[in-house]
Image (cartoon, rainbow, N blue to C red; front, side, top):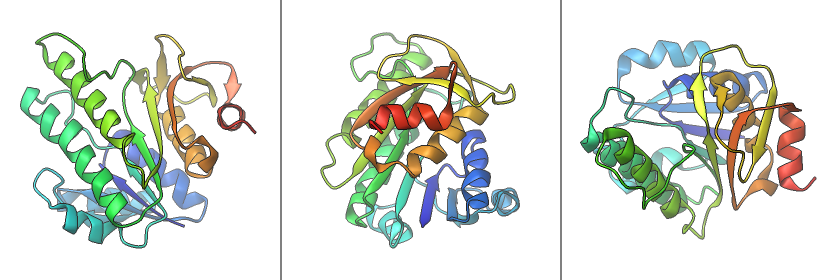
Length: 218
């Protein structure tokens, strides 16, 4: 199985790449900075240079050609302004989903955010972020050619993962280690029965594998 991850040098993406490579999958991570390539190789992933803010759908579809799963884990980052929330968190996600559909990549995972809402009000940068993520999620869910799953983690923390989570359509507010977000994504890659679901994720008391099987109806 070949898996292509947008935002391949992100904190969640690097964790996910290690997990997927350890399971024997062929993993590629899209990055815009060639200096990040060694970090991806150490994680077991092939770095692919591409700037999703300026690339065409055709170019990204070429990168995705032959992939089995596409994962959007890119983000403008906490230090970015309102403009890049639109060009990365919304625009790059829309581009990546359209390219995946064009390349006939059926499985698509979207790393979103709890509270994402295209109608969210407010003028602060975080308000713009939640709107951008909501608009991206809305777009992905209209792509009839994709077997999509949208994952909306709560507040991300760097504590060591516990492997215990709460994964439901609505969990309520909470925090979750990035380790556990990556672990859930790795299970979602292998669980196409979660297609069509938008899921919230926080720390909890259910082992990751069990939590994913429960929402998949297994």
